[in-house]
Amino acid sequence: SDLAFMLTLFERHPMWDAKRGPGVARVELRLNRAFGMKATMGFWLVRVDGTEADISWREAISPTPHDSKVRQ
Image (cartoon, rainbow, N blue to C red; front, top):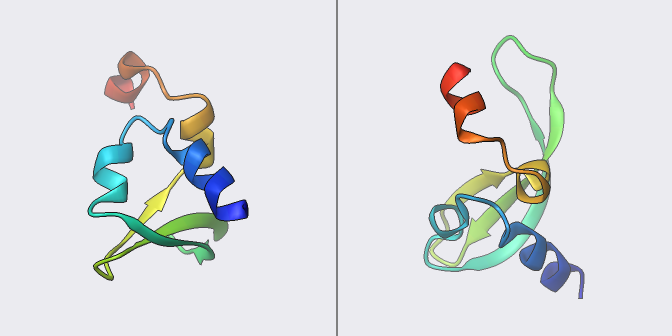
C-alpha cells in the first residue's frame, strides 16, 4: 500500500513519463550527494529494466512554474 501511495503521488510530477520509463519496480530512499552541496535524503525510482531516476515529491505536489525554471 505504501508503494501504491508513492506512485500515485509521483504521477503528479511534471516529468512523470520520463521518470517512470518502462515501469517502476520499486521506490528507494537514498542519501543524495551533490558536489559541493549538503547531502540530503531523496526518493529514487528503480525501473523494471534496472535503470534509476531520482524524483522530487515536492515537485509532484507543487511544480515549479516554467518562468521560474527559466530564470534559474
